[in-house]
Length: 522
Image (cartoon, rainbow, N blue to C red):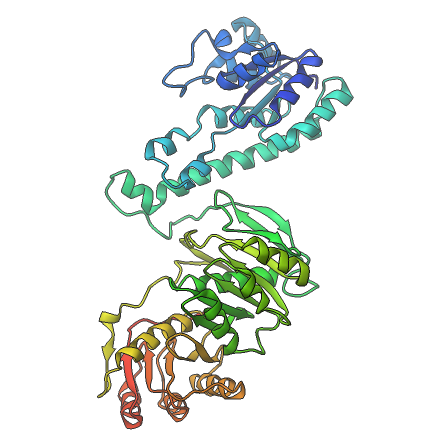
């Protein structure tokens, strides 16, 4: 199909000058609007303004430019139907064979901090999606380009064919065009349903967190070497409209398991405002530490399990300097992540740890509003487990209440236990993880494992506190941690045998508090 007239109207001007030049060289008439028309005219390219075709100027602050039969008639007319072409001739409408459009950056503006409601609303494109859909519907007669990444291939085909675009290319472009408008509308619908938008719009009612119909789109950001195992294909998809809160300035590409472990580490690290360090292995914490400095915090996290840190992931919530990097000497890590790094730290990593993946992470990036997991036949959706512990709501159930220092340690232990796979028992001080029992089929086994791991690593369990992610169904688990020397325990409560467990705690002199909050992590 020979291209004789093209309509170009783009917000992102990348590459449009070069494409328009190629069209002009082939004798294609170019119709354009607003800023695109000015850019092309200043570049010496002859263009026809849309207003010259429609007989109407742009109006309503640019809200109405191309919504006119002179435009959409020229796009939608089927060239293989005589009555369509006769109608165009009768009304003086010239066919448009190529539509080059990209849309207002709605998702980017909506996600920008400080964007006003008016800015967001005005970045809902109307004419652009209408022209894209018209051209894509009529792909048998019209080609449509919606992204600057398509321009080079389009220009090459036009040059090679003397100004024609094949049926195969038009069909492929139409597929991408409908995908793009669907993505665009989904982003708008998602934003309008968001609690933030409901509040800003001053309308009554709450936006449902879990809507009756769930629509989202993700685009492939990178292929991964393989999945959890070498025989499984895998890729990382970025949710469209959602920025990725990390970048990889140094090191090999991330793997599937890297991203799973990193996500687990980031969730735990976000629990703390003070200088903190976490070590994750197979999505479970094996080291957590707090300190006056991030170096002190890391040394405590490392001491939590100096064996399992090998091959693990380390995250800290303060900038990484040379001293911290030097403490990693002799330790094989998959990932180190932090808000930033000094130049000396990066140079040392490049010199001594060529296989280490270094991530720079925005800890201010809000966590997702919903979490997803695929299951047979569908998707499970839930809000994230973001509830924090209110110390004033703790219910002391034993004869002895925890001391102030024990209360602080219990708060720390509770935050760590929240990120350990169920059944979970953790032993901690007020600033260091001591023992972890993760993913056990019984709570007593989780308690035994937490103690065994701590003792096996030479860590002192006497004087620690215990956190359990769910209630103790029997007293046996509490007996285990009492014999190890724990002095206080925090748990949700709610078991039929709570009185038995409380009596056991009193017998051992353990202070116990109930939270009423369970933290299962599967």
